[in-house]
Image 1: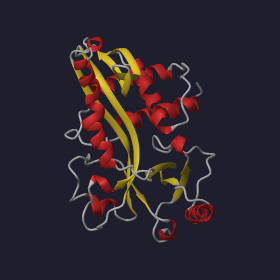
Image 2: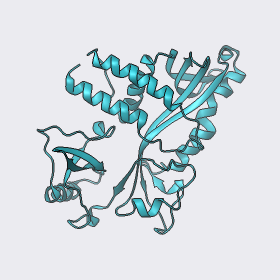
Image 3: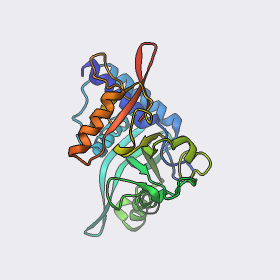
Image 4: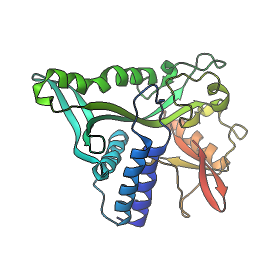
Length: 287
């Protein structure tokens, strides 16, 4: 593994583990922070030895799971790790558990559901913070509210219910279900601070990762303030941007030209990291 690959993997693993969860600990059961830190130190040590990493998927959600599988595989308290475990009711498959493992320290089985999500907040009333239903995903029916309810009422209960009805799963005792949901919620341009502080839905983590979104017609020299911009393809959405010395960064004029040129031909969204210089190094300030 090259030094560049090593740096990127550790940066993205750190983000996948330690960036704020989208949902609060009251809304969904979470992994223990100390337990996560313990595993990260082990994986970091393994990566720094230069050992090769497995082949990762180019699909963002699967890539997120790939990174977490490396983490769990190297955690000193994890044994009997299974990924993508099919859950059946007789001959019929009724679902899949993202991860199942035995946690040696607590002598218990853990069923872990994971997801990485990027939603746009599109409130119907700009003066009141919207409910989860007004966070829109890429699909027409993809809403943050639907994802939350599906996690809480279906995915996290599926394996426990299957165990209670299938003698072959009786060994899964004690069993606890946990969730790890990361990502960024994007608010209308100029609104992230004003909209969300006083009317935050209780399901959301108060420090969840925020960005801003805008239609191309709303973007101009006065509406954006970053010193430099870095366009991010999907494979670089995880982790903070870390441009190298030879990376082509866009100034404000070039950023506006890039948006104008893209949306003349295509409708799919673009994601940029907004960068500011600190001690001679370009650092991501927002997206």
